[in-house]
Length: 146
Image 1 (cartoon, rainbow, N blue to C red):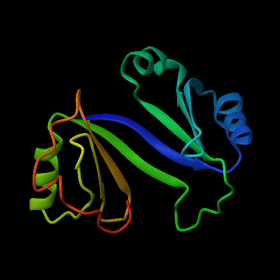
Image 2: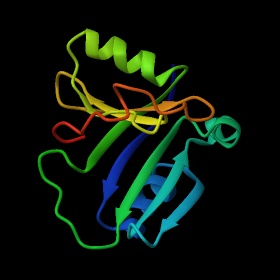
Image 3: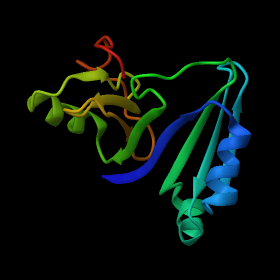
């Protein structure tokens, strides 16, 4: 398993970039605009992590700016922790066997979401190419919020 990023939702992208970059000292590594989803993702890294961020896309902070105004309550401004895993199906099976609900199953062989005992959302991403869809994951519905 390898740590990737922490996602934080922001309501004012310019103010957030001023804080994280100009004041805190993080550097913008890449930006993704998604017109269909109406959001912008900005990935930041500490100067000492620049080379690793460029090579591995980690460790980073992901700022998520939704273009349509939103109010975040109940901790929704904090998005999730993200980890790459060697086998997403094995990781999800191990978690499920331990009593963890798979909130967003890895139907695509690529991504899943679970929650910690304190409700922190954890994104699991398949290392490398997505695995072929497999049961029980392919037909498993989402459960709760993720």
